Image 1 (cartoon, one colour):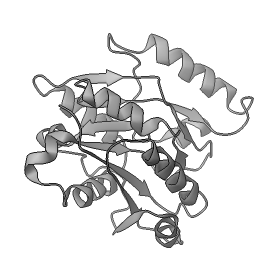
Image 2 (cartoon, rainbow, N blue to C red):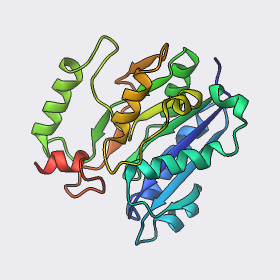
Image 3 (cartoon, rainbow, N blue to C red):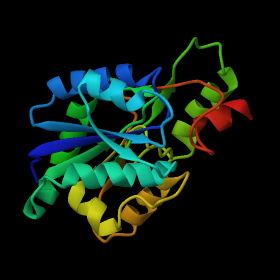
Length: 227
């Protein structure tokens, strides 16, 4: 079913240093997308200027006090879908990334092509920012897992920083759980349990994400890098 709109949800907790670049990259991707795009940044339990900076960069901002990635993503999706008529959920796509990440100009166009081809959940990959010699072992392990840890539909990674889902399928699956971590994996499992749902893992249009060692999610990439 051909998409009519895209909503992009970005949870951000104390991301004043990166949220401007994130928003700019999503808006650049939106310019390459042939359907309307609504960008919602969720300023989650922030103690800095994340919300103001995101708004200044051109995002619609909602706030959350949850201090939880899952609750923040769910809050953002709820806000984004509030303006979508119930009958248009099947033609609305939810794309997710993170406040410390940047997307390529073709990111949303890729999501749109996959959705129009019948995909209900798109699982993408990430690349680390910084020089390639930094965190070399993580990079090598990640690349190896991309090709050896997957399924018949592709790689085995699940990242909230690069995920897209049809709104009707998201709602049928019960959405993101209010969890501090792995809400992305939980949603993927819920969608896979739905009869007839089509899931695609793709290595196209990876998202560039921070290589910091102290992250906002308790079990995210930062924890893996610091292990």
